[in-house]
Length: 170
Image 1 (cartoon, rainbow, N blue to C red):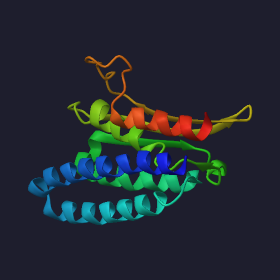
Image 2: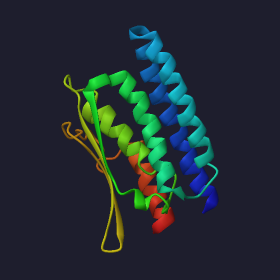
Image 3: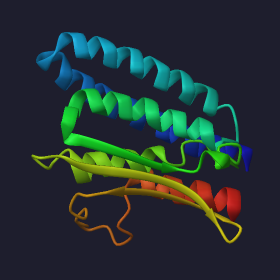
């Protein structure tokens, strides 16, 4: 189980890195100073991901910080086209979850829902407890992502996430 978890987690790391680097490449041509700031955020993000990859689970608060680092990068690139709202119960931050649980969902929300839209869009991140369960939600105002030849409607990141959730929680 540990080996399978490490394999699944390792598939996410390059995906996050490549998307962040693509955003940086775009930014270098637009605003060199912003690109420098973004590189610092990328360094923080990668440091957190490396630490997270050493664990089967990590506190939800650390997952929130990984997402915040990623959003800092995207905010530099997208500017006021990305509007983020956190509806996050910080009392849940000590609950342990599989690493990089929300990251792929946030990445997809921006890549497919917000970035393609000329005016951009809203991203809402929610964490709440209800009736003994924890609810985590990533919502964006973009159009639903069209499914082309993929019966499950899931890309690599979402399939990976489903596999990791099944591994941890059955």
